[in-house]
Length: 383
Image 1 (cartoon, one colour):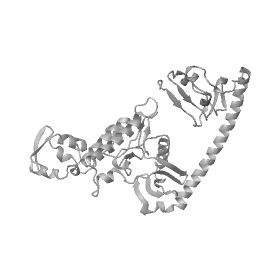
Image 2 (cartoon, one colour):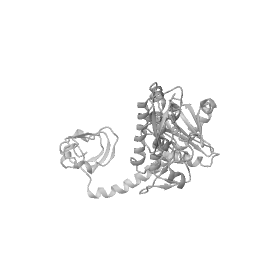
Image 3 (cartoon, helix red, strand yellow):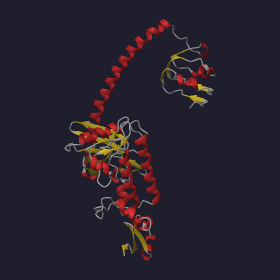
Image 4 (cartoon, helix red, strand yellow):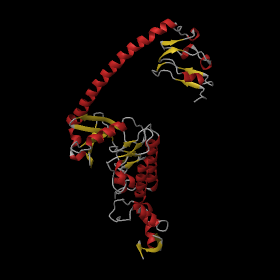
C-alpha cells in the first residue's frame, strides 16, 4: 500500500521495532503509533518528519530525536549488552510460555471431557443424534452459555478413526473461511475423541434437496453452489498448501439459518506438499462422486474436488442421485444429462423448480438425442 496517506496504529499492544518498510511510504502525512510496546530507534527519514511527540508517546522502548519527546538511543557499547539480555529474557519467556500452554492444554482436555461426558451427558442421548457416519456420530448439544453446538464423536473401534480425527484437527485449526464449518473446541484422550463444531440449524444440503416438506428455489441453489466455489478456491489456491477435500457430497454441505453453505467433514482430505500437484491414497471417498483416476489409481489432486463438485452440481439441479438404481453399465448421471440435452432439458431439471409449468409439457412432443439417434418423447417415454 505504497500510496498510503494516513496510518493510525495506536492502542494495539504492538511490539518489536518500527518496520523499515514504513520508510517507503513517501505519501504518508499522518502517523500515530502511540500507546504500544514498540522499541528501537525511530527513523529520521521523510515519512517520520511530519510526526509530533504525540505520535510516539507511551512506547517506553523507543528512542530517537528528542524533538519527538524520545530519549536518546544507546551508544554502541550499550548496544552490545542488549543481545545478551534479550537472549536471557527470551529464554525465560519461552520457558514460561511452554509451562502455560501445557497447563492450559491439560485444563482444557479435562474441562472438555467433564462438560460433555458428565455435565452434559444428555447430549449423547439418541434423541440428540443428528447423524451417523462410518467413523462416528454427530450429536446436538448446548454449552453452558446457551450456545448450540454439534459434537462429532469418533468411533475409536474403527481403524481410521484416530487418523481422521488428527487430519481434521490439523486442517481446521489453521483454516479461516466463512463457508467452512467452524471448530469451536476439541476433546481428546486415549478413550475419547470429539470435535465441537458450529451448529447448523438447517441440516445438510441433502436433507433439503430430497425433503418433501421444503423446497430450494433456483436462486437458493445457485447461491449454495456459489458458496462452495468460494470455499474451494480458498482450499485449492488461497492457502499455503493446497488442500483436497476428497469426499464432496450433499451430506457434507451444511446449511446455517440463512441457508449459507458450510463445507464439513475433512476426515480423509489430503494436503499436497510444496510443488506437488497430486498425491496417492488408499482411502476412497463416496462412490458416484469420486473422479475415475481417484477410484482406480488412488491419485488425488484438486481436479478430484472439481469432478465431485460437477457431479453434485448436476444432482442439485436434477434432484437425481448419482447412485440411483437406474444408472448401471455405461449409463451414469453424466451421460444421462448429456444425452438429454438440449431437447429434453425440462425432463432432467428437478420438477420442483418447474412447478405447474412441468405439467404443460405432457401435451408437447419432446425429443432427445441418444447415441446420435433422435427419439421422440411423449409423456416422458421414448416412442
